[in-house]
Length: 330
Image 1 (spheres, rainbow, N blue to C red):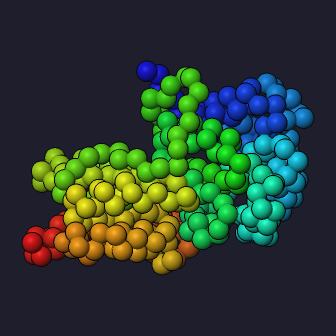
Image 2 (cartoon, rainbow, N blue to C red; image 1 turned 60 degrees about the vertical axis):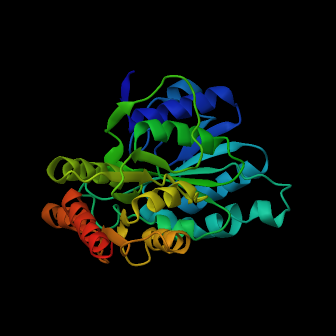
């Protein structure tokens, strides 16, 4: 099977959606003529024209607000906010309008709005262009929050999101855009459910987005050097959160490590730990550990940024600590 990058997979999903439904259109800063800040829309204008591929002013409030209005009259907008760091300027449109409309109108109004945005550090973009703010969004009832970890998932999840009648914040990690994997050419959709990326019997790592790859690297190292079999579960959708595959995995391995790039304090890992603890308490043989970023802004200096980010060394250390506790409590 061919291999394409996540950037190409997102672009391909947009082509499929545009060709299958004339109500689908996109708008955002520099997405038409320039092709998007991260170049995912590089050929949409040539293929679908300025009516369906629209550049906007630099106003996240206007972009999301127009998307909300278009959704209410039957369109399926895919709006892009260049960098999740600036999503706060459109919070009224997201948390008070998009997230609440279907509920407040008793289901008589659909809200098929997709907000594509980018997160993540590791590229030297500095404190205002590198954050992971997904936990804030996952706290808001009424919106979906989806974070793919590879090109295959990105294509299927984005197509599913575009055809969803609920608002979806689709968060793409900037460091994953060039990473390639096998992706079918034909259309397909992926449900908002976790996926076991690697099976194992000794410990479960629960993670998402770019940290899936870091966790898989750590799992490979642990297998090679210590014979430890780590199961890696990719959450994929923070909301709706399907805990069943995660609970099933932790009940099998009896211990877990949560890995995410966002700051540890108030991060989504806390919710994962709470639910795992609630449903697997009698199975756990060790305290659940977290590997996350420290509670500081993302540094600009390369060496500091690399130190800030979770990596396979930090993940491996947490796994070994958890397994030592598991052995002591056996």
